[in-house]
Length: 258
Image (cartoon, rainbow, N blue to C red):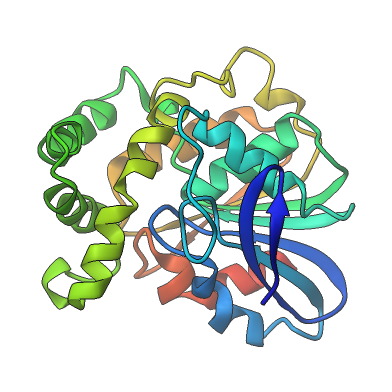
């Protein structure tokens, strides 16, 4: 498992398979390990690269004062080989979309699994409900209570109940919560202008949107905006799945990759 400086960041990544290049970008508080089960089914078709995002897994921390979404995107770009299928889940999905928006390299396809571009839902009942649902753990995060914030985050987005996690898993999640606050300007306020008029409409890459049937209402609203504005898009809803569908229903991601 290689590790080197990528886009100025100490970066660890995993590689599997051979064939068409594919870049796999994980969600917040996870790591490249989440893609390992999926990779076994694809190693004869795709040359897969899955980095640990900055501040995750074995990658180094984010430098103080860095714009987090900018740095994550720069690091992800360093792995593009041309003609990539880019798969992004949650936070990773917003990075994948940004790579296409900014035309950082020729891409073959995007598979976006519930990209958490929350700003797309602003002004809707789903946005208001999400604000109420996450108010407690956002307040804990602002107060520096990372453990309580991680518990709340996990209860909203995680695949397993918080109390079922091992103590070391809880500690790791708590330590990574600053990544959530660091990406909030990009994801909740659209500080990087991903939703600006004409931007999504100019994406010239085929996009498959995947979401779980039982996911949070705000993700249904985000998908609705993306489905309406992206010019070449297909949405697939995975029955019985929630936000963590790459882990619970990897076959849906495998099928979407083509």
